[in-house]
Every structure is written in C-alpha cells, then in structure tokens.
Image (tube, rainbow, N blue to C red; front, top):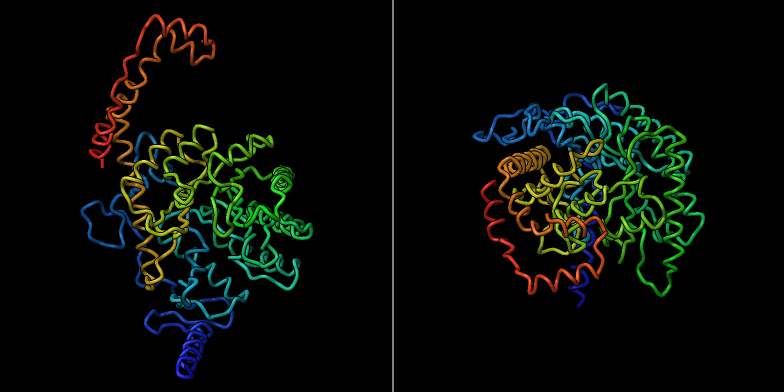
Length: 474
C-alpha cells in the first residue's frame, strides 16, 4: 500500500511539473521573444502563403479544391464560403483535456496570460489569416485579453488589445463575429442571462455590452450568443419559466443596445443541446426558433448552426441547417464535425465530402450566408502538435467545403435529384393540391375527394435512386 501511495504522489508531482513548466521557444523555428509583445521574425517561418494548385497537387500546404476567385453558380467561391479562423481553438487551444495536461507549446507562447502575450498572439493570428488568404476571424472577449481584478481593468485590457487588432486588420480583414465568454468563470456556474443571482445577470449584461462595442469597433459583421450554461442541471431546484423569461429580457436588451450603438450586423444564437449543462435552453434549431417566436424576437435574430452541436442533439447537420433555412433563420455555420463513437463535442475539422455536399446544398438553397459565413470552430487533435498542423487542418477543412460546393452545384445543374423530389410531390401539383396548400380545402371537401377516388395509390419514395444520384456527384 505504501508503495502505491508513493507512486501516486510521484505521478501527481510529474503532472504538476509538466503543467507548470515555463514554455520555451523551440530553437529550430527561428523566432524569439523581445521585451514587449514584439516577435522577432515570422511566427510561421517556412510556411508560404497558401495558394490554389488544383486537385492533382500533392502539396499539403496548397489548396486542391478551394479556388477563391472561381465562379460557381454565378458567385465566387470566396463569397459562397466566407471562411473565418476561430481565435480560441487556433491560438488558445493547448491540447489539455479532463484526463491530461497541455500538449501544444507554440513557439511564441511564454507561459503567461499577460497583455504582452495577448498582443503577441494577436500578431500571430493575423499572420496566420494572411497566409491562409482569408479575411475573417472570430473571437470571444476573454480569449483575446486577460481578465483584470475588476470589470474596469478587464475592459481596459480589452481596449488595449483590440486597438492593436484594429491596426493589424488593415482595410480588408474583419471579424465574422465576436462574442462574450459567459461560461468559464466561476461566477457563471449557474449561467449568465439565466443565473439565479441578479448580480451575475448584471455582470453578464455588462460583459456583452462591451463585447458588442468591440465587435462594432472592429467592423464585425455579426454578434453571437452561445449559452453554454444557459440551462439547468436539475429541474428540482430550477424555475424554468422564470429563467426563460430572463433570457428573453436579456436578448431584448441586446437588440436595443445594438440599435443604440448603430451596429448593423446580425445577432446570432448558436444552439446546443447540452455540455456543459445537462440541458441547454437552445437545444436545437427548432427549439430556438420556437423560443424566438414565443418572445417576439424572430425578426431580430438568426441562428449560427454548429454541425457537432446538431449531431449532439440527435440530428444531422443538414437537418438543423434545413430547419433554420425554412424558418428564415440560417445566418452562419460553425464548420466542424463530431465523432459518432464519442458522445461529446469533439470539434473536429469537417473532412467528410458527403456531409460537406449536403451542407452546401442548404447554403445554396439559402442564397448564401452573407453577412454570415463559415467559421472553423474546430481544433487540432491533442496529438497534433506541429505548427504546420494548424495550416494543414484549415486547408483540409476549406478544401472539403469547397469540394462540397462544387458537388452541390453539380447536383443542382444536373437537376435529376430535384426532378425526383418534384415527381414525388407531383400529386399536389393539381387543383385540389393547390387548394390544400392555400389553406382553403376543408375536411368536407377532402372527404368528398377521398370517396370519389377510392383507395389511393402510393408511389415509391425512390430513396436508393436519390442516394445513387447524390453519390454520383461526389
């Protein structure tokens, strides 16, 4: 027993040393720290600006399918896709998980959460974006600048880092969206807008107010609400009706403030069923649409659909996209995927061509996503620890969606799938069908028709043919 205890203490000590070790700059990457936030040399030496080389290219640092200026269905690929880098996964992801210490020690990191370190990360962010050749990024407020001892100090930290971001953006780069992180700090353990504590509710409002101001200042095109802790762990101690009412009042206040500051971007809600809460109030697209409808907010918000969140709620990504689209709510997509063998939000880069094609069918039917786009809410696997892996992952994700766009365009131009669907519902392309769809066919009229026609004929749904047509485009 004593031996086991000694071994356990030794393991704990080793893990502690790993976690608390000062992060050093690997000598082979060419950069080094200066006294302030400046970085001497490139953050990504040896990585060129990523260019399109076509499907035959074997270069891992080149696009094979994403050709930004190429026109598909009358619109440039870059305008269909509107790609964005997520600051949190790309520059704050450490590879740590509930069972293990961080595995990623990027060369520019110094092991601190200082203002100088925040500025250095911001410089790395914009070099990364420019080398990918895209012009959008997304952020949480607490990802880009450290918390201070007071709200005033925290806001001052944000102002300092955001001033640098504004300078680095230049004329072309803008946030696809910004948001407030209302889930990590212990004050938000009961939620922000749904907290049982009025002081927390007020603090959350102040934090969102500042994040909206910063998004507007940076020229952001959207603002996102993700309620990671806006839900419950148990209904025994929860007044659900009151919490939902509070959430609605919070969102109403956000709408009012958006208009007050002249922010013309779209307000987005990002549904998720659970994690970290047992049950989140914006479970899926349908639940969120109903919430907005109940509280008279349908015209003020759209949805940011995350594919991995859709699958956690028991749907396909395509299902939630179509649900959002037919309700006029599809505003943005967090492009990622989950592992069907794992029951949590794994945030992997989307690399499934079939899924990407179905995603792009929804986007095309929606007429695009602007002013929304595709944000890569995806992270490297814990075991992927090379700097170039950041580029390879994004290139792969961008190429997958670009290929999905090409495939979806093939399906639309070919018309076979659309014709199959049209034929399936062709019985409604009749006088009585038009009356049903116009809402003027009552039960008496329909009963008369049923007696006149007798037993109806039921045609094949042709699912296998639909799948064959779909596969032929991949």
